[in-house]
Length: 79
Image 1 (cartoon, one colour):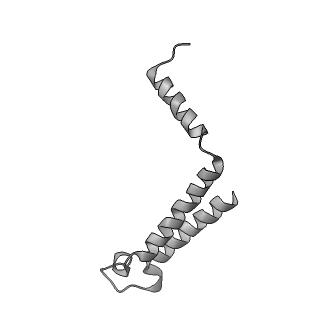
Image 2 (image 1 turned 120 degrees about the vertical axis):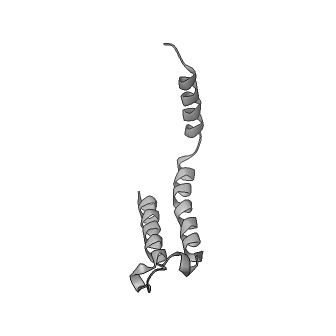
Image 3 (image 1 turned 60 degrees about the vertical axis):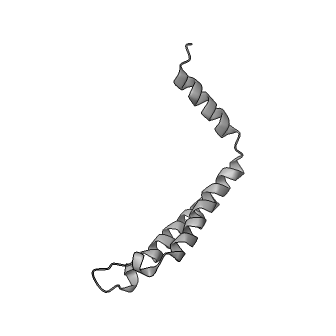
């Protein structure tokens, strides 16, 4: 079978990916949303609420973003 340059690149990428232990991958998939959760908390309120009208409790996007990230962390931690 003839091997092309793209096949060789794909084989090298697969070999590199197989060398990464799965617990490290799981840790990264959990750590990234946790880091984003901290970043979301640090965002100023004027960046996460509508500017054209008075904000209500449900308009603060920080809460919803944080809950979505928490859901991802829970799913990745369980499965």
